[in-house]
Image 1 (cartoon, one colour):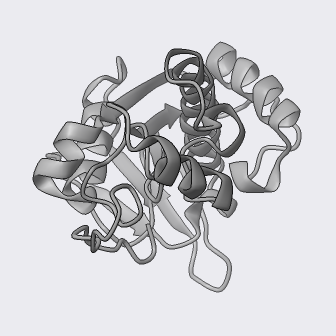
Image 2: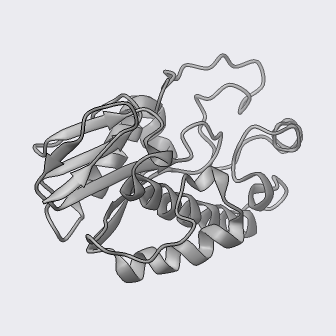
Image 3: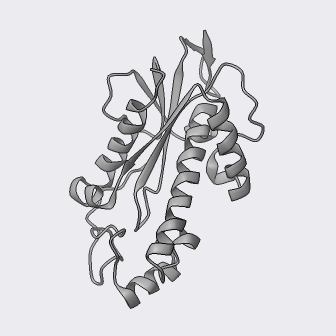
Length: 210
């Protein structure tokens, strides 16, 4: 039996394996949204494991290697800009999560999802707001999603220079918005997001808690 707990709540027992799922890139103007799914073993050695946002790039890179080596199974799922434009960022994020879960080679009995939105799946789910700082399997998923997406944006910067994608990773920084004003969008931009095209109002749904 694997024991899961959340501060301030009763202990809960579930049969292993349990997968954690989190995403990276939801609020960006460019690149895909990437979801990570990780099933950790009962015993693992991942010192410093926590929410990816609390770690440096070097810490994330080292942990990502260790997570891949020790996980019972891990996978990534994607939703690319054209799909994001077509179905909105909420549905695209949920689709990326569903793809990551479906790609796991070990089938979980429970999926812990960071945030408050379940995704389409036949597997039982529990949503946990702030779960990336509570459950190690979600922390691991957040690290894999973040490190992969950051590397992908560095490669996109080589193909589409001038936007600074390797620095801001697609987020709407001042540098990025100024580059968009100067150069216009490139194929990896999300055309329905505010700031990508001059005078455009954002048509994407927000994702509170995810």
